[in-house]
Image 1 (cartoon, rainbow, N blue to C red):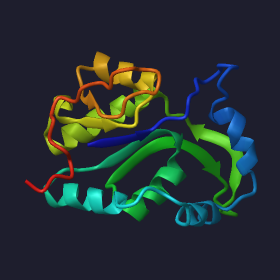
Image 2 (image 1 turned 45 degrees about the horizontal axis):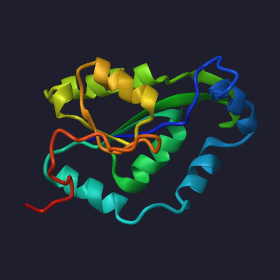
Image 3 (image 1 turned 45 degrees about the vertical axis):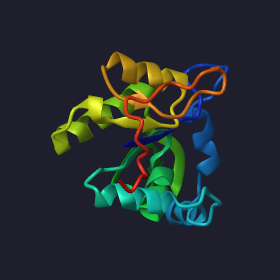
Image 4 (image 1 turned 30 degrees about the horizontal axis):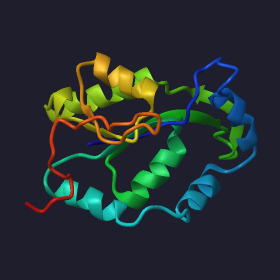
Length: 173
């Protein structure tokens, strides 16, 4: 299972500001403080329970996002995801504060690469991935890679994309 959270953007696309546009807002904020705020956010009930059930069945749950990796790491810690990949903000080693610059981008294609690396690490194929919450661009990247089903329909589609498996990831059977 792969959980992706996509913020619509493309690097350099003026219609959808990317990481470069948002990074300056984090300047002089401590990584620890930003992560602590995320531990207090409201969220759907039972995400940690769902991830725990998957982990108990030997299924790794990871987060791949074009959003900030520190946010993904904070949520992974909160909910029990095993690994994350996202865009990185530069942190000043001396102060522990964000500099307001991006040190690594994460585009939809990078999310697929990350997922493929996790599959290789686990010895499973991309066809065994269930991707949740993808935007259209990421969905196209997964489809072109010969990968996974998409379990969350985009609101513009009348019919949801059918998953390859009809079993709920949270079913107890």
